[in-house]
Image (spheres, rainbow, N blue to C red):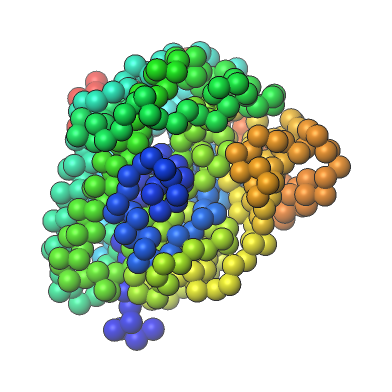
Length: 486
């Protein structure tokens, strides 16, 4: 591509933002004016998914542009360590300035993660992460679950303080890139609206708890009757701490944090505009996964319902249609292909073989409802591998050693009717499994994962060491980590 047609790419990624919690997604309560404006001048991808509904494996998958089972960064104690070639390193080696600002959740800044510079990075604690999630054969009690409800309400938190610092650093960095004669890639990663559900008062006050919507299934106590989902719910036992009052307060805090995050995004985009670089920069907004927020009795993530495995995805800038919506299935793995495309970096054999597609290409093509999208989960609370396959109107969820689930998202968008239990001969069941096995052998992947996790437990000093090391409900910020005992 000619030099004057190469663009910058600015990736804005939040944490735990569910795909429906935006005004531009039709949400009747939450206020996201800056994301709405970005969508108006760009394209929304309405069927976007995470590679895994958990932070650490997803961020490793984003970095490499490959499936979790391919890179074998399975869980929250197996963070990206720079060994697999990242798209960031690919761009940097082609003389693109690639800078991260904010949360990464990789092993360490001492690894070559591929960035030219890491500003205010948040990595996993101690280079280890969250080892209690490795103990899947005999999961221990997870007492930290009570913190989620205890932290609900207005106030300051280390996470919102950190996001303000990230936003200021991003503004300064973008201003400093004005006049650059070569393309750049910025990866700006905010932590909101990730819990703790402690929200700055000016944003909490935007929402009256008494007027908040209640979770799906809350009124009638409807919960999925599935053997593996019961295992996950037993470990992440958040729901028992939420009565109706606390649930409404949690919704107000979550929406407030979403509006706070949107305000941070607005400041960063204003800096891009004021620096004169907006017309030559493709902006991508995503989150690493969603949040169930009490729907069907689940809080946070870990499950394959759309509130958890689905993600918001918006792209705008050169070559991206304005005011457009795309129904083609997309994935956070597409970010790697997008970054290579936008900066016009030549492919090598590694990048060419990755499963992602450039979102700019997808946005300019007719909808392809037949594209298969995969998400997988192998982390805490689960006793077996879980795989989600999406195509057209169907969602197939495969649990190794347990019955599958099947949902028709067109007829049943809240995923309340599991067709696998009512119609076990449904044609979409066999089609979903066929599509999954085109990508991987689920039984073999499950076996490999448990083997790797067994070795990881040994490397960390055994099960007792995993129980006693770094037990927390959310990763401490860099400032908090600096204060932890060695």
